[in-house]
Image 1 (cartoon, rainbow, N blue to C red):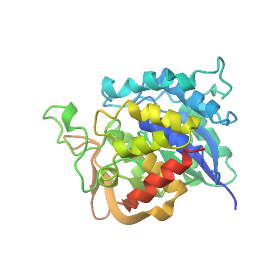
Image 2 (image 1 turned 180 degrees about the horizontal axis):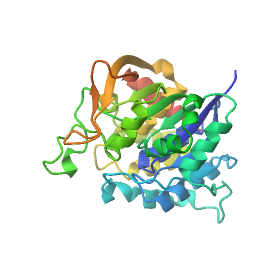
Image 3 (image 1 turned 45 degrees about the vertical axis):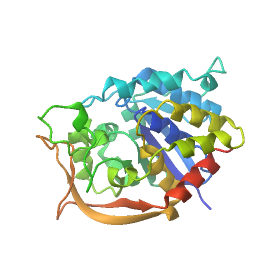
Image 4 (image 1 turned 90 degrees about the horizontal axis):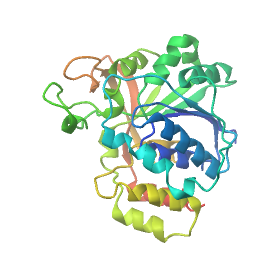
Length: 307
């Protein structure tokens, strides 16, 4: 079976690193590169942690690129600090030197080049904002035809957004963070003909990181991946935390666990609803992950990280 070529763009949140760890276990996937977008992170430790994870998993041929884009609505510092915490985990600092290469060009230039050079259409896995992709499209509009599909953790269709606790009454709370960081960029991508599969809050809200899952992870056979995943999840077990980016990535490995639905949607780029992903007749047709076999998903994650 031929491998699926995937280019991964993440934004350095805790679940982005776990999504990377899952992606790297997929034998049917050929990873063309990793881009780190400076949104839910501080960029230097986020790039460092990304390279350390790739090194740990013995795949240091995969290049990493640092995007230099900027969004409109910054993530809270409390979210972004986890990039420092993950970068300093002992299991990621057993080697003195990294071998995973860091691209000399910016993340958006790297993305444009990789897509232009691809011999076949590429799946773009997005677990952060669309800003780097929008910038790459500005550099080379012809890459639109080189993207087979975007798989994106983003948006809220029939669920509330997740920004309302962090802002005053100037926003109506309908947006999800990966859209809200840069609504015009998401709106720009929505104007393209690139097919999109969306993993919105509607489904991620149903798949929580539970204490039971963390305990099962800790009890299974000792392996660097399960140890690292357990250390990461230990950082957030004091709060409600969901499999946002990991669930999105799991669709690449086990699409049979999911049910999808098609919707016509638009992105609201400005105003009190900026960043809202709205169902609207005549909008861009997207496939949305609608439901998942939660227990089978948990089992899949445990198996992938068991080594």
